Image 1 (cartoon, rainbow, N blue to C red):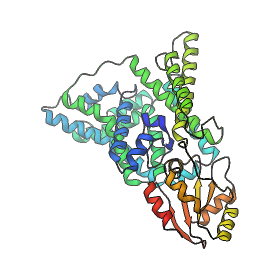
Image 2: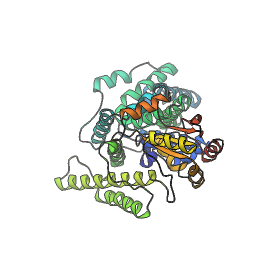
Image 3: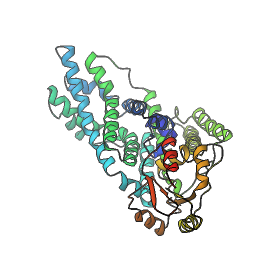
Image 4: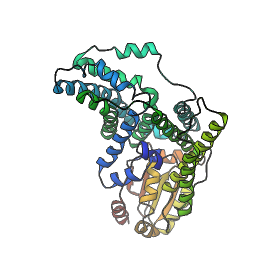
Length: 433
C-alpha cells in the first residue's frame, strides 16, 4: 500500500488505498481504478495460496484432512462437504478481522502518524521476518496445538471447528501476510470489501486442504523449497518494517520516476538472490554462509524499497506547484478572487499518494489547476503541526485522504474523501467558479 509495489507481489496493496504499504500498488491500483475488483481479489487469493505453502501450514494439510474425516468419507461428495466445511471454518476466523479493521480504518490511519505506532509496527514486522529466517520460532505450545487439533470431533461440525482453530495453529506463518492485509483493509475503510478480501484470503489458504480432502491427493514432501518460501516472506517483512519507518528515518526515494533508478533497484534484488538471500540458511551453516545470506537479504530489501519508491514516485512531466501555508493561500485566493484547491496529504497515507500520482499529476488536471490557488497541507510524521491537524478538524473530516475545492468567494464547492478518477475530478474542478 501504498504498500506498495512489493507487497502487491505477496499481499496486494490496492487501489482502494493501502499503504500500502500504500499499497502497495500498481496491479491493484489499475484494477480498482477501473472498477474491477476481480483482479485485486485474485491477487489476494494468490497470497492466501502462497501462505498455505509455508512450513506452519503445508505439513499440516494431509494430517488435518485425515483428522476431520475427509480421507475416510464414503463418497467424494461427502469428502467435498467435509472439506468445504473446514475451509469455511478458516474463513469464519479471518473474515470478522476484515470487518473490524475496516470499521476502525480512520482511527488506524490517524494512528499511522504517530512515531510510536509506526515504530511498533516496524518492530512487529522485523520480529516476524527474523522468525521467517529461522532465527527463532513463533509457535503455540505443542500441547495446545494437539488439543486444538482434536476440537470439534468428526463430521461437518467438527470439520468447521477444526478449520476455525487451524488458523490459530498456523498463526506464525499467516501472521506476516495477514498483518499487511489487515493494514490495507483498515486504510480502505470499506467494510464490505474488507470482509470479502479476508474471506478470499482464507479461501486461498484452504484451497489445498479442500483439494487434498476432496480428491485424496498426495502432496509433495516438505523440503528446502519451504524454507525458500519463508525467506521470501522474511524479505517482504523487513522491507515493510523499513517502509513504515520512512517518515521517521527517511531512505532515498526518487521524486520522479527514473529508469536508471529502477534498473539499479532491480539489480540489487537479482544480486541479492544470487548471493543467497533465498536459498541459503542462517541455521546450521558456516559463518561465511550466514554472512552471504545476510548481505543478500540486505541487497534484496534495499532493492525492493527502491522499486517501491520508484512505483510511488510521480510520473515524469509537469506537476502542480503548491503553496505550503494554508493561511497565505486562502488570503491570496480571496484577494485575487480565485478558487482554491486544498490537498491534505501524508506519506503514510497510501490513498493520498495514489491521488497525487494518478490524478493530481494528470496533465489535464495540472492545466486546470492553474486557475486555482493550490495549497498543500502535509500531515506526514516529520512535518505535521498541531495547527495543521486542527485545520483538518475544522473541516469536520476524521481522516485522510481529503481534498477540498473552494469557490472564489471562499465557500466550499466540493470535497473528496476517497479515491477518485481523473475525469470525475476534472468535472468537479470545472464546476468551481
